[in-house]
Each structure stands twice: as structure tokens, then as C-alpha cells.
Image 1 (spheres, rainbow, N blue to C red):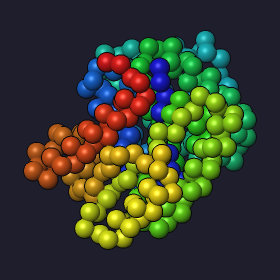
Image 2: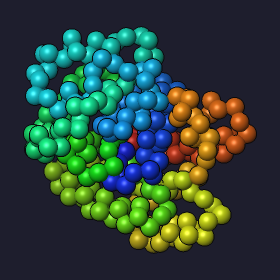
Image 3: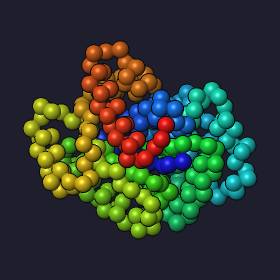
Length: 260
């Protein structure tokens, strides 16, 4: 199983929409997918609620022996999950930042990921809260890859610098972690500020910019609200969004060296 974290300390940058669409795309490729929602806003859990298991995300940070998991994770083998399972966000996540050290959270979460892998999943996709907290750091310590959607606005660009620094720091403890790069998200091609900021990022991080960005598309919001991928939205406006997201998913699939 390969594990990808979608992370950015800035909210509203298209992080969850990216993760959800990667999950739908990978599912259609025939992969067995597990999604872990570590964001207390629970947006991924809302869109993917039909795939929800009995296990909740805060349990992944508990020091529970692996032998206790089969009873908790019965839904992993439920055929109704259609090869995708959600470990949803829950209120318990809000308390972890105050109660647990990074060392404890990281160790417990790594063990939990090993247990999840034992259920036969091909890929694990993890959504994170928009903050550089314990749960995000623990996820990065357990992951193989990290992807950062970024909005082409000043606050988002300012935040990504700290995100890049954080990833570089955590890679010292997790040598297998690979930064796939930054995804330009909610791009308005008619906005000269967006064009200018994109050029600045490409100059500053030439090796870290994903070549396939995603535009500012209302059809993506429609899809998330309807709990379906954008290619299921029967509107002409959804076609361009579908092309962009499919291209992004293909790029990520290739960089993660996944096989169908």
C-alpha cells in the first residue's frame, strides 16, 4: 500500500476537492482505496459518506494493539464499500492537538497505517487540517508521498513557504517521504495576479510545481456537494474541470508508481 497525504496549512485552497477526486479516479482504475479524513471540518467525510466504515480517524492515534483491530474494522471487507473505504473525521480529533505529543501521535499513527495496509488496500489517501499541527505531522511521518494544492493568492503563497520547510524537516525523520509538489488550484486564467504569482512560484520552485493545475470551476463545488466526481456532473462547464482533474490524477498516479 502506498500512502499519500494532501496537505497545506492554508485553508480553502482545494485540498479536499483534490483528495476526493484522486480517490474517485483511483477507484475507477480498479484500485482498492482507503481515505482517512484528519480534518475536523469533515468535508471529505461528507462527500464520501457512502463509503464510511465504523472506524473513525481519532482511533488511529490510540495505542491499541493490532489484535483488537479486526472487530473495529469489520467494514473493511464489506462488499458495499465497492473497493473504497472512508475512515471519517470525528470530534475526537479536536482533542489530539492538546493531549498528545508528536512522538506519541506519530508512533501510534504509523502502527495504525501498518494495520490498515494489512487489510489489502492498494492506496491510502489522507486529508489533513489546514494547520501545521500534530495530526498533520503524524500523517507526514507515516506517508510515502505528500501533495500540496495551492491557491495563487498572496496568503497562500506565503503559507506554502512554511509548508515546504516543514516537509523538508519531517523528511529527516521519514526518509521515504517524497514531495510530489504543488498543484496550482482555483486558477483564474483571466486574472493577471494569478498569472504573476504562478510565474513567481515557477521561478522559486521549478522542481516542485505540478504541470497540471485546476481552474476556478463551479462544477467542482457542485460535484462535491452532490457527493460525486465532477465527471458525473451533466453540465458543459464540467468538461474542462474533468479534463484538468483527470490529468492531475494521471500525473499523481504515475509519480506514485501505482499499477492497475
